[in-house]
Image (cartoon, rainbow, N blue to C red; front, side, top):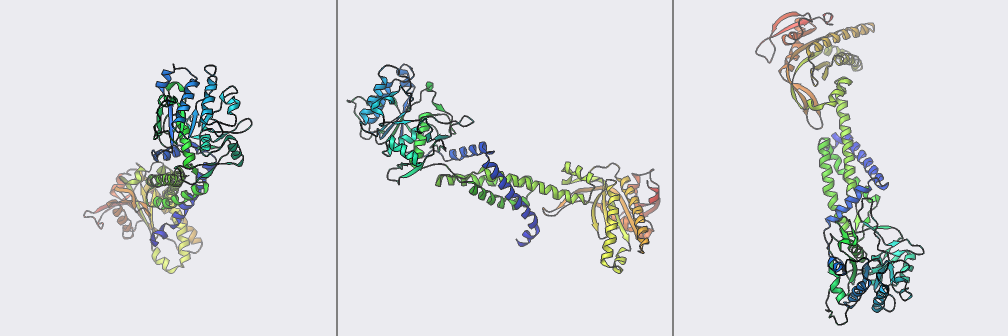
Amino acid sequence: MIAWWRARRGRLLRLWAAGVLASVLVTAASAMGYLEALQTRALDLVLWLQGPRRPAGVVLVAVDDAAFERLGRVQPLSREYLARVVRGAVRAGAAVVGLDVTLGGATRPGDDAAIARAVLEADPRPPSRVVLVETGPDGPLSSPALRGLVFQASSSVPVDGDGVVRHVALAVPGLDRPAPALALAVAARLAGLDPAALDRAFQAGAVPLPAWPPGGADSPVEVQTGALQRINFVGPPGTFLTIPSDPVAALADGEAAVAPDNPLRDRVVLVGATFRDSRDVHPTPHGPMPGVEVHANVVHMLLTRSFVRPAGWTAALAVQLGVVALAAPVFLALRPLAGLLVCAAGALVLALPASRLALGAGGYWVDFVLPVLATCGLGVAADVSERRRVRAAFDRYVSPAIGRRIRADAAGLQGEHREVSILFSDLRGFTTLSERLPAREVAARLNEYFPAMTEAIFARGGTINDFIGDAVMAIFGAPLDDPEHAQHAVSSAAAMVRALEALNRRWAAAGLPPLRMGIGIHSGSVFAGNVGGRDRMKYTVVGDTVNVASRVEGLNKDLGTTILITEETYARLAPRVQAEDRGEVAVKGRTRPVRVYAVRADAVP
């Protein structure tokens, strides 16, 4: 483990720094609202994953299609009918009755009075257990008998930019005072508040509400006028118990029997329209939902205190930092794309259940999207870092132009058979000379020698495969195709000899001894590609061609030559290059001899 850390410490620290930067940028983008649409849908998913829950004591009384047909399909709905529904719910023992029907223009004279009588019969003294939706100046709430008795609530639900209902304003700004949302007015009445007490609670910024199930600890709920609260839906449409309105209206008759254990007793009853022509069906994250059921979800949220509380940017940043800290070593162990897929999937697998658990346990919304985005940012950084590392490695062995072409099409780096020419060069007597000279002088001469050799090779499209002591191994024809690889290898050899002659003249002027070199070139088939492990990968060539080229270079000393090429290389050159046939020679590792040719540097263009 210690060795692993030491070998990768620098890269790992750089990735961690990139992860911190990615986390900060993602957090800033979230705070500025650039990720709002994505985060909204992420919360939709987590809320949906909660599944249906047991709703609080809320029952829906639906004016459905059957009731609408019986009423003659007339809108606004009959006030007399609605008054009967209110009376029936009160007779059944409802704790609170919320009427989610806008009482606009009356259908017949005296209809508003019917609503007023039903309210007064339920509770002649405040607070009334009936909650009505705000109306115009001529509606039933304009009756002096109802002033101060009945909550005047708002049934409006704000719509997000994508047309989906996700939020509610618990207190809606009004001309002289804020109006409570229908759900808040219902919960306030359940707490025993009257309209005046609710106004005072608005001024204090907190409304004391009861808890569900009964017996739980009551606590105030903070309310800010106009502030939007995310609705924590209990489940899909149909989660709440729904009863048709006609059987409830039938209970308005004094002679109708009321069962003591009927489903409305001691419950919050919300009356609303669900018939197709009501235009009171809203898109929600759980699908189309009647407005009365949207309000039921808000009542449940208020009574159970199941609010969605954003965890805040500090918690979000901490989660991101933890995830990217775990992801960074994975990017070191895998290639960038594989690491990105593994880490992004891992971040999603870990963060999504954690978000659901935090929301279900304490109502805290810890956004799982942000860690995934931070991990993707880290993946981009890892990819850029890997590309730079590969570029730095190749730029030492190939010219910048060749390096750009390799990076643009790196498929050949994975391994393939190629026809190439291999060049080996070595300095004659340099080992003996280096034993006599100070180490600093030896290094200085090599630092002049190698750049000159590198320039000669790069200028003709060669790739330096390795520096071995004072020896150089170069490849022509890989990793990029080069039909003229043999010619370019021989031209590079001649240029290397001329470059050494120029260096010798400079060294002689400084009183330094000259150096001599030998070069061997062989052409043939090799396997070319990346070889090694994840942490140390090298592009190289493997095959008999490499062995022969190395052996041919060593023959220069015995034959008294500077540049030797094999018959396979010469066949690709003739008649452009003049060479002297030096016959067949035995090469270690081969059963058959190899014919070699001596080339003079001044005979090569």
